[in-house]
Length: 330
Image (cartoon, rainbow, N blue to C red; front, top):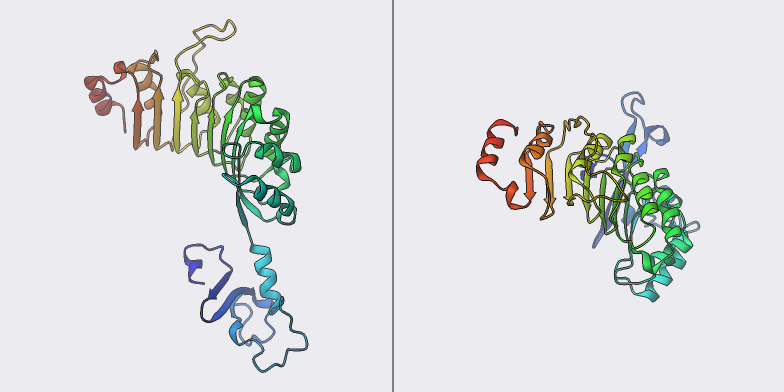
């Protein structure tokens, strides 16, 4: 139980070696042999002495191979959490796992499925389990898919169920040729997931209406955006959506007009990012962002401690950066 010092949620200690023993935390009101004051303590640690359990044979008439300590076994069952990583999983092995998965659906904490090395894996998985909300203890999800290998509607329905889950870490890697408007809407919906703290989005679809994020309040603390079209001015919408950001890594595209969109958009006040500490920006080679524009955003980050810029030569002026470091950055 020494692990409980670093992880207060620890409730079981188990030794498996040449000998075996276990202990667990139990509520005091369930200890019939307690002779002390029930008001002083609420819980105690029970040493099960598993290795010596029923050495004298007194419990042989009720002993089975599967149930030496009913209370201890039930605690293991309740606390058990499973991690399934199907990335690079052989197709036959994956089919076998899919058949067994329903028995463990309420114990899965981490799930990784990908089309990268097993084409059709995501489609097969979502054909069996159409909504992520079915996995009530799911906390970490890695979803890597290629639109050409599946029916986008199946993925869309699964993603639309994500705000009803308790996922706190989400990584999406997608290759999209069509249905780009639907992808953008589904992506924006993910920001509504209140439990989400880490979100990584790698995509090749070219258009998303980032202004929709300004209407959403998200609890994301670590955000990575790559591949998806994001202009420098779109940062203002991201800032308004995720005020709790601690780390932001974003790839900035060159300015491109879509469907008759005006090149110049209305400018809004840039939201202050009070706890943003790490900021990574990667600019396209033909970006029109100037040092003054960058400075305006950096001034909204009062506790910034890490800044990484990958940019064109105009943003790498030594004198301009010297002045910025001396006058604007914390």
